[in-house]
Amino acid sequence: MSLDGIRDTLGDCTRCKLHQGRTTLVFGVGRADADLMFVGEAPGRDEDLQGVPFVGRAGQLLTKIIESIGLTRDEVYIANVIKCRPPQNRNPEPDEVETCEPFLFDQLAAVQPRVVVALGAFAVRTLLKSEQPISRLRGQVFDYRGAKLVPTFHPAFLLRSPDRKRDVWEDMKKVRALLA
Ligand code: URA
Image 1 (cartoon, helix red, strand yellow):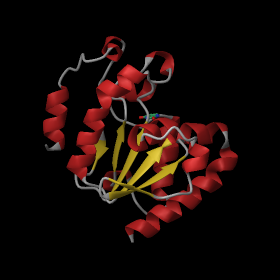
Image 2 (cartoon, helix red, strand yellow; image 1 turned 180 degrees about the vertical axis):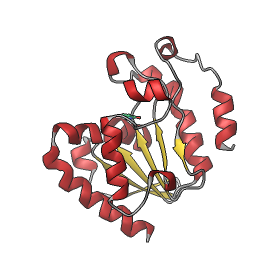
Image 3 (cartoon, helix red, strand yellow; image 1 turned 30 degrees about the horizontal axis):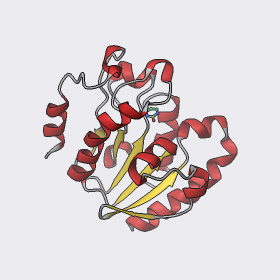
Image 4 (cartoon, protein in one colour; image 1 turned 30 degrees about the vertical axis):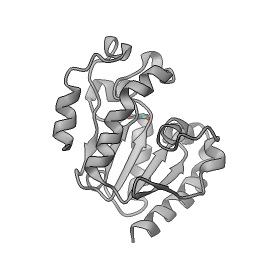
């Protein structure tokens, strides 16, 4: 299915309780045939208001991370596991992930990126079905549905722990090499 088809299928989604508090469903943004796709967790306040993933403070850092390997946001595809903002930005609950993850899987199948960067524990857990901590998984490259998957820290975590930016830079160098 095309990205437009997936968006149409979601419609004015009421499949889980998160629809009650959202302003906007945040589907995804970027190139429909991108080689590189980023997967985050869920929209925050700014994303909920604007309907675009990663536009708040963490998003500005993600933009810099993308630019650090010579790409722009327009050249990649960005989506989240969860399409609607959880109240007070709480962690997504298992039933919400279960309900929403098929749409992310469809987005991955539509874009068919060569490299997927999973940002933070929720994205990694959803994609790899691994309960291992992100600190253990990052630094490795996984095969994922015909693509290479690179787990790394979530930019919101980097805002709290800037000393880990070096690790993300190492991960992004790997991404650049995989795309070359
Ligand atoms: N954090 C996420 O995981 N996704 C967003 O879109 C914004 C912040």
